[in-house]
Amino acid sequence: MFWNEQLETIERKALEKLQLEKLRKALAAAATTPFYKKVFADNGVDVSRITTLDHLRDLPLTTKHDLRLSYPDGMVAVPRTEIVRLHASSGTTGKSTVIFYTAKDLADWADLIARSMMATGTTRNDVFQNMMGYGLFTGGLGLHYGAERLGCLVIPSSTGNSLKQIELMKDFGTTVVHITPSYAMHLADVVSENGINPPDLGIKKAYLGAEPYSEGVKKKIEGQWGLDAYNSYGLSEMNGPGVAFECEYKNGMHLWEDYYIMEIINPDTGERLPDGEEGELVLTHINREAMPIIRYRTRDLTRIIPEKCACGRTHRRIERIKGRTDDMLIVGGVNVFPSQIETVLMNVPEVGNNYQIVLDRHNNLDRIHVRVELYNKMFEGDIKALDALRKKVVERLKALITVNPKVELLEPGSLPPSMGKAVRVIDKREI
Ligand code: AMP
Ligand code: ZN
Image (cartoon, rainbow, N blue to C red; front, side, top):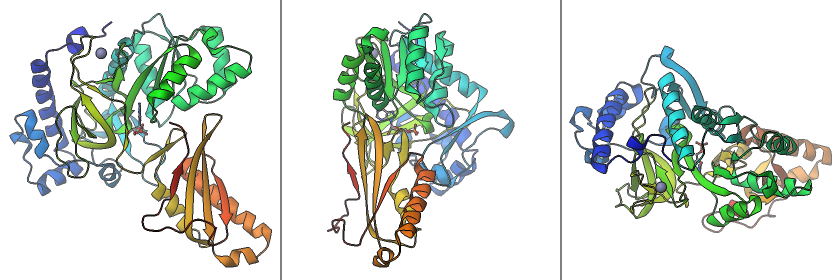
């Protein structure tokens, strides 16, 4: 089933021609922004000389750090009055990465989501329960407008409140859900605890994304609920969800190449790799007026699947994300960099030199446990002072990561001393 058969099955030659036209437009727009004006000047880039898709590799890469540097609007290419919405990436201190959209950008994004959902067989006859966070995070609102565009009955239930979620499923006959893999497993347990066999709820499809997970977890969720699960990939810098989506064949995600130009690079050298080799995904957004982003380093590791898909779509597929080239962790759907935790800890004068971050899952919900060594003298004081200090650390970490951390204060020498490269993060989650 196609949403836009002509665009989805477009011949490669015509697709590349379309990409080049859109790329040139995006580059011209980017060149008007303070950020790219400077980057292009510093690197001697004349965008009018980019006349083939291959020339793209000569342009500098853009990073998350660049987005923070140009906060709040150094990459904006339209007048302020044209912008109708912003989203921001979660879990960052102070300056988060902010993305802006014009009305056309939002309409185009909804269109792409409608296309993605239809590629899995969802239609206007479906009841779609959207259990992703609504707000600054792109996951909720992104799928929301796409599903409305497709004509589904949309239940914007957002995250949490499991009993309410189950009630909504039963009362309105939900057939399609959008959910993180960890919450899908947790919710299956809650459904069972309430005496319901999850497949009896009649949900046919789940869109799973926003965090890394394995094929094993996908199979487990399919078995628990008796449904088909489809992998959904996106990142706020490229709009949010809808960048790449599995079709009915569930065999890798079609990356929508009329909106994005993808490259796979060697993360160490920046050199472009041939189709089929694993490396870091780099994306150029060629379909956004408010904020064109050129050669964005996603830090996500994957591979292009060069073979044609049986569905007939010509947009190439990428494999499940294998990991990241940086140390970003996704804890309960929130992006967390260990360095941010370290900054918080190091700003507490009583904290000593060693700490450890332990991640695990309890009832399929992520937990974060921060173990911190203090200076000796802290243990000579009274227990109340120690408890107040622990609360202070919890509050500061909570402000950063929103997930409630467990904080343990330790005497010096309690943690294994680091020999060479310190192992600060211990991830015990099964993903
Ligand atoms: P955010 O910008 O906060 O939406 O986070 C985007 C990041 O979430 C991506 O760069 C990936 O690391 C991760 N992510 C999103 N979808 C998936 C998925 N289907 N599989 C693995 N990781 C994902
Ligand atoms: Zn396909």
